[in-house]
Image (tube, rainbow, N blue to C red; front, side, top):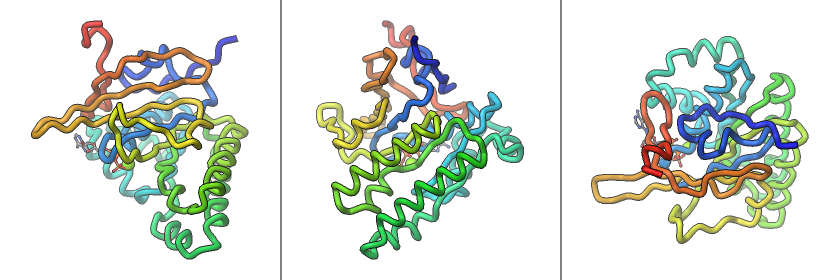
Length: 245
Ligand SMILES: Nc1ncnc2c1ncn2[C@@H]1O[C@H](COP(=O)(O)OP(=O)(O)OP(=O)(O)O)[C@@H](O)[C@H]1O
Ligand SMILES: [Mg+2]
């Protein structure tokens, strides 16, 4: 039986995904700095919350307040964000990044800190009954756990935890070199079900943003690298017709 598809609600992205991401999948949103990973993930949860699905944004890189302020500044037409927060359909929480990093760099405590982040996320999902979550970003966890073997095990533990919880997650990850031909994934990313990459091609005074779906476990997807833009109405991924396909 084909998996149930979860609509991201992001204009153009569901078409690239032939309907959406399979329910319960763990999706990596990878890209360079400023590509829009945080905003895209925020919009995914905003759209879910509007459909009445409890959604949790867990911020590790910036404070929840800043994530909210940036999203409101970019998506000025999302006028009901505060209502969704008030009705607890949209929950924006997080761990103070400086505290997380400080204790992580102090040595032996990093594994404990990572475990604490994971259990905090889990408690929040369980207590709120969330079905969709975002963790922004995994790169912070990378900094938290210095031993590569421990890091891989931690990633696996995180993914298994999210699977057990049954949530459909977007997890953002910074890519050091977001060029197609340089595309290499860390070995631990292979435990995730889906990979979406957001490229930024800088050209003098004009920049081009484009999205590619690398894989979706359990469903088909487009192989076309597709331009997108960040607008006040949300992220807008070009349609096949607009691309002349
Ligand atoms: N008000 C706005 N209007 C249009 N575009 C905006 C607006 N605010 C932000 N952006 C765009 O969104 C980008 C930032 O998006 P976002 O914070 O989601 O990126 P990111 O990939 O998460 O970056 P980082 O790696 O730094 O976390 C900016 O580079 C800018 O191009
Ligand atoms: Mg970000």
